[in-house]
Length: 338
Ligand SMILES: Cc1cc2nc3c(=O)[nH]c(=O)nc-3n(C[C@H](O)[C@H](O)[C@H](O)COP(=O)(O)OP(=O)(O)OC[C@H]3O[C@@H](n4cnc5c(N)ncnc54)[C@H](O)[C@@H]3O)c2cc1C
Image (cartoon, protein in one colour):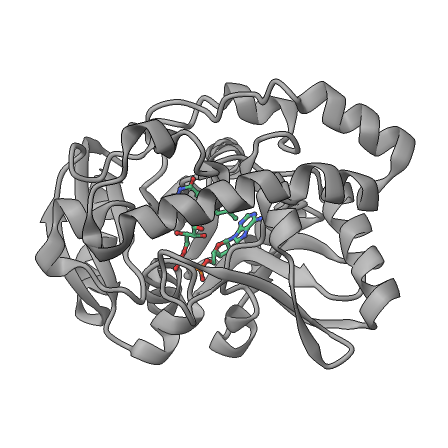
C-alpha cells in the first residue's frame, strides 16, 4: 500500500562533484538512479539520439547507459515502446524494482499504466518540474540546419556549468567545434514553441501523485544562502511514504537541507507557463518560412535591446540597485533559466 504524505521539501546536491558538474541541477537523477542500478534494478529515463535528433525513453540497467540520460533536453521526448518494454521487464524480473523519471505528464501516464497492470508497488515514480516542452520537430529541423552549416553533431548540452548553474551555457559540438545554440534556447524561454497542452499543464503544482518531484532549487541563494552552491542545486518534493524511504536511502550521496514550499517557490510550481501572444505568428512563420527564419526573428535580441541591456548592466555595476525605470529594458526571457 502506498500512502500519500503532506509534501516534504528538501534542497540537495550530489557530494560527488564530477557528477554534479555533468548534471543540469544538483544531480538528483544520478543519486536516485544509482540506488536502483546498484541493486540490479532498472531505470526508465529519456536519452538523446544523435542519429535522428530525438529524445526517447529507454529502460536502463547499468550506470554506463544511465550516464547517456544525464542532462536536460529541451524538446518533447517520445515514449517509443517503453510501456511494452517496461511491462515485459517487470514480468521477467518478478523480484526487481523499477524507477521511472520523466516530466509530470509522462510520469502520471506511467503511474496510471503501472496501477492498471498491477505493478505500482514495484515502480517508483519521480517527475520533473517543467516549464513546458517544445515541439520535437522544431528541434530536429534546427539540429539538421546546424549540421548543414557545421557538420555532424556529436555532443549536445543545454546546461553546461562552466559559468555556473545560474548562467548555463547551451551548445552543440558539430564538426569538432563548439557552437552556441542561444537562439533555440531563447525561443524555448519566450514561450512560443511549447506544445498547446503545456499552457494548461495540470502538474504545475507542489501537490502531485508521484512518489517524488525533482527540479532546480531556484532562488536558493536568497532563501537558503548558506546552502547555495554555484555548481548546482536540486529540489526534492516528497509526496508518498515510499518517496520518504527513497530519500532516506539517497541521503548518503547528498548534501541536503530540509526546506519548505515557501522557500522553494518558482513559477512552474504554481501555474503553467503562459501562452505567448506571439505563438500563432511564430507557428505561421515557421510553416511558411522555416526554422532558420523563426530562429532569427524570435531567437535573437535586436541591437536596440542589446544596447539598452548593456546600459542597465553598467548602471548596476558595484552591486547598486537597478533604476526601476530601466529594468523594463532587460530581456528577462534570456535571463530566466529552467
Ligand atoms: C523541457 C524541460 C523543462 C524544464 N523546466 C524546469 C522548470 O521550469 N523548473 C525547474 O525547476 N526545472 C525544470 N527542468 C528540470 C531541470 O532542468 C533538470 O532536468 C532536473 O532538475 C533534473 O536535473 P538533475 O540534475 O537531477 O538530473 P539531470 O541528469 O540533469 O537530468 C536527467 C533526467 O532528466 C530527464 N530528462 C531530460 N530531458 C528530458 C525530456 N526532454 N523529457 C523527459 N525527461 C527528460 C532524463 O530522463 C533524466 O531522468 C526542466 C527540464 C526540461 C527537460
